Length: 283
Image (cartoon, rainbow, N blue to C red; front, side, top):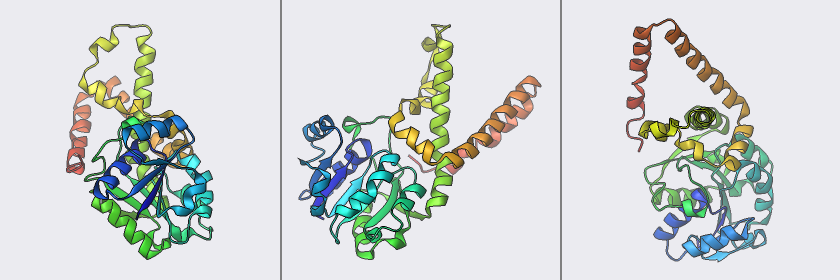
């Protein structure tokens, strides 16, 4: 792959560009963004080699789409219209069902690989891009059988070469599982931040008491609303289901507190400590 076009050069697109370029110095990374200032920053940081537009996609060997998922759903058919018969398009969206449905009947569906690299930070934009973000991380690939074998083979090698593990999943299962493992944690963090901010208006000393526990728990509340609102919208049914279960657990904990049943609270926390075994090996 010689010409790679990155549509979106923020945290994910920019970090992919860094790692791919490191492993393939001869590759030319072309950046596409609706904001010229974003492309200027990406050029200054060396994330991309050239600016480009959608009209240039006929020259692409690979197109990496890493923009908000609502924009991906709208733009993906147009991107497939413009690529050559040998070009491949991959997306990095955190939801997969709506994105796959958007192109399920497209004549060039075989030129698209739906994926979700499970990696990131709470930061956004080109300045958030970092080397090695994907090392040891999992890349979920959906509907791999719908992608031309030679193209999927090239893409999967590209991503395993930067240190990613590949796992296959159908889009419906992906969106259900990711609601628990990612989307709920972001909502929890946003709402914890809101609770504290609302309280801080009356108690100015509250942030003086904020330690590392609070900082790590609320970290995700710094994430981009521009990115996360469309994710919650696309995965609404699954997110509501996870929230209902989470609220039941919170209410149960509150009731135990009211009943002074601290033995039960101890048991709840002790049994939940098992999460460290489940998460063992995740950096």
